[in-house]
Image (tube, rainbow, N blue to C red; front, side, top):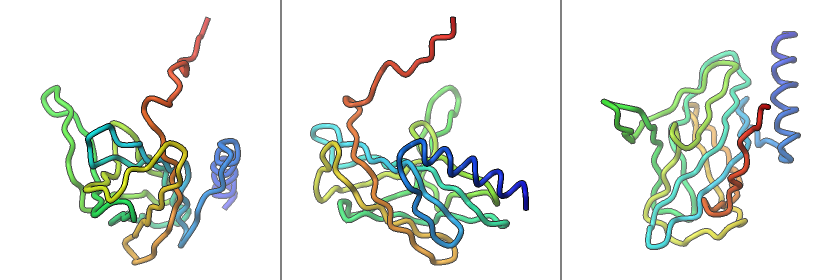
Length: 157
């Protein structure tokens, strides 16, 4: 139990430092939710977030939806024969007392057939559905790849 309390304190401290409160349901917390502003002429985009499983049994994220998209799919990236490949996933495991990062180059959510294009800074609702049927609505912040800082490399001299 002490280990669990320590882990949760570290998780919560990192979330507080990021300036946002996690959304929590049925022992699952979501933080750092972001949606990319679509590239011009494209009707798809990607969503990213961190999932923290606070329970002693594994969980699975089985679907995501958003009012801005006709459909959403869980995807992963992997390297096959030196090439990056994207693959649709039926579900994504969230380990017991663990976490799963949805990020560029890894697991992510593809929002397809957009009904409207989110603008930088806009809040975009994502509804995450888990294997037990529980759902969690999260507000993701729309970010453009052109708005990101490019000076986040650490200088270790």
